[in-house]
Image 1 (cartoon, rainbow, N blue to C red):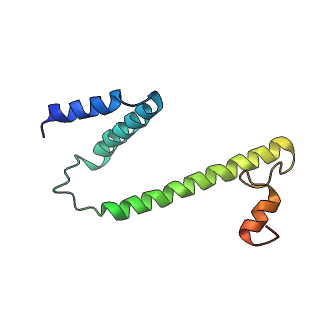
Image 2 (image 1 turned 30 degrees about the horizontal axis):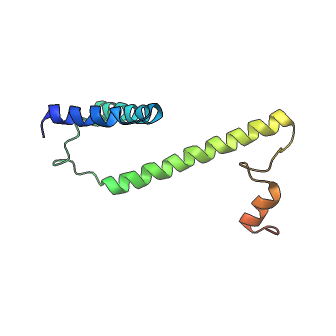
Image 3 (image 1 turned 180 degrees about the horizontal axis):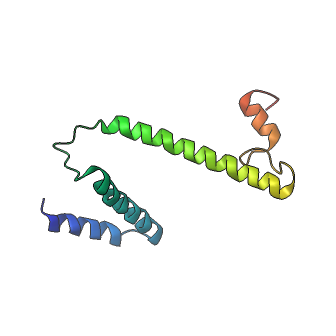
Length: 105
């Protein structure tokens, strides 16, 4: 496939997406550019990385970042309201207790 064909496919996909999805597409392209600066050109036929394993590690890291953001947001809400205002992470306290098995639920 030629570079022109690839550009045409990217442009066509972009043109068929709503603005928010276009932003997601741009973010992915920007991540590829950043990866190129760090790791060099992406040449799949010569790339010996274990992509499924790396994806799992990255997903696990992402979950850590999301959980940390939720904890920080909850702490900020607690400080703002002076007390836990709605349980942890958007769940009412009694519902959370039922989920973790420490109460009726």
